[in-house]
Length: 272
Ligand SMILES: O=P(O)(O)OC[C@H]1O[C@H](O[C@H]2O[C@H](CO)[C@@H](O)[C@H](O)[C@H]2O)[C@H](O)[C@@H](O)[C@@H]1O
Image 1 (cartoon, rainbow, N blue to C red):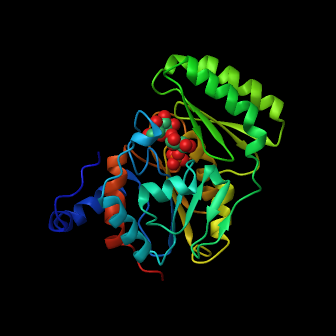
Image 2 (cartoon, rainbow, N blue to C red):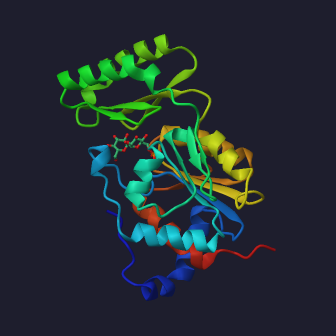
């Protein structure tokens, strides 16, 4: 669980030192014209054994609210989880949310953008994954509607047979579906959307339009987001340092991400 500052006084008295540290670490100087795109698992919450076992600190809602207020609403969660799941975990705290790695999106005004229902096409894969999980207690199937995920965190040795099974079914689904690998998970869903395309969609509309995109993420699927943000002249920040990345900056852990995000509302440089 992240170490939250004990009081705002403690934070304020350390503010100037912290900002010098940020500059030394090469982190971008916060600006009031940023648009913030935040991954969820591994960025805002620590990775847990099971998707339903994540701990959402109560303070996270307050932090998101403070960021939304200070950036005039230009804050979105961009996750692999479905919209409804994110709303349940965050108490519907954030209006702008993208789920299923860019497949579905709710804009700030509440409009939902979602492609046609393709669940039926995943029936064969769903049955095969359920059968696999039935035989292997370390596997877990997460049915996300238009996408389906096979988790093997509880038994990493399952990666090989799990991948072989998912690849086999993905091939028969054809090119309009794609396989995405994440942290000890294999996910199948409709092709043509990713975290980069959804950030571009947010950036085309208010209040994101015209701002500088800044993205925080930890996983391989966040690389699409990093590439899009880099292309758009923004800043990409990888949480963790364990593999090569397109991100321009890094924070070591979820805890560091919290500390940095906590300071942002007080240190945004005004638009000139
Ligand atoms: O884009 P994200 O918000 O990072 O979501 C990516 C996937 O996160 C979840 O799975 C991952 O986190 C689980 C809980 O910590 C962990 O048990 C699992 O091993 C990770 O892969 C979520 O369950 C998926 O639906 C998301 O796609």
